[in-house]
Amino acid sequence: MQLKDKTAIVTGGGSGFGAGIARRFAAQGAQVMVADLNLEGARAIADEIGGLAFGVDVSKDDQVAGMVAEASREMGAIDILVNNAGITHLPALMEDVSEQDFDRVLAVNAKSVYLTARHIVPLMKAQGRGAILNIASTAGVSPRPRLNWYNASKGWMITATRAMAVELAPEGIRVNAINPVAGETPLLASFMGGDTPQNRQRFLATIPMGRFSTPEDIAALAVFLCSDEAALITGQAIEIDGGRTI
Image (cartoon, rainbow, N blue to C red; front, side, top):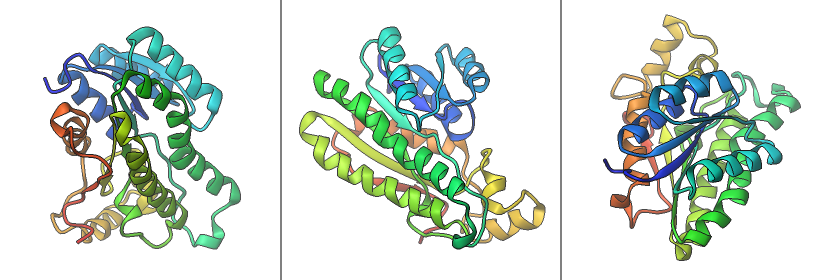
């Protein structure tokens, strides 16, 4: 019960890595708000784990403010924030990605980290503690061709994690990131340019351990980094990649 009596918000918690994290947090004793653009998906996970569900577009300031207000009303202090919500553009030459797709990727993957910090960091400062976990990607460490602006958004998230950690350490707030290799999530088909046996084999050939990441892989590290057992760990961006970035 590493997170006993802790409260947490997990964005993008209705599927994929976020759902895995929400499940593991609840199993470890946390009260969890599952926040997702897909409210139906958020409700399904929240009902399963005995948590709260909230529908939110994390790129919109007013909706993030509403999420934080609801979490505060229902859970009291917010001990943990997991910025997991993310999207990608389809594989394409960098100059062929539309401005609309570029704006949306940066809004969801980067601006959301700013918005959640804007509304949650003051609360964590007031209580003198907190753990923030950003779900970045190996794409921010070892970029893949034709996913240029997605790569850049995850590189931004890694740098933001380190900058936040330095600034917030004196306030008792830790900030870390996890860099997963592509996993069995709704984004996988987009990363590969279509979910076919050939594309899977081509992608898996770049991972020395020969498999995709799973929500359970990510959730196990997320629990540790957000627990008191990681009390001196901050500013780290840790790969879960089966050797992909070696």
